[in-house]
Image (tube, rainbow, N blue to C red; front, side, top):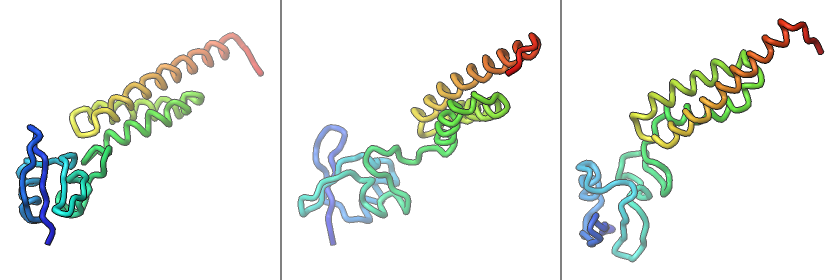
Length: 145
């Protein structure tokens, strides 16, 4: 049975702990997926790399644990909206949906993705509006191609 040690917020090593004790510390919020962990064999990593510590879904290094699906949707819609503005019929709903998802996602994990989605969706919505206005003006002035 492997024992684990973790480094607390003050930089001190705590342990040894069994897997069950590590799971209890995770449930209490004492350790996070990004808490440095070392095994008794000297293997180093973060708590999120150890399967079972945070349930069946565990975080990998550099990935935000439990990132909100709404924040991810905001980011994806923002990226798609950067291209969809060319056709305002598609650009409006995609960018508005991205804005709504981003605003909802601000209050959840994945705040950075939500903010990026809001920025991209705002830019895409602005371009969609400008494209629609330009198309309307061209239509009213009888410009044809």
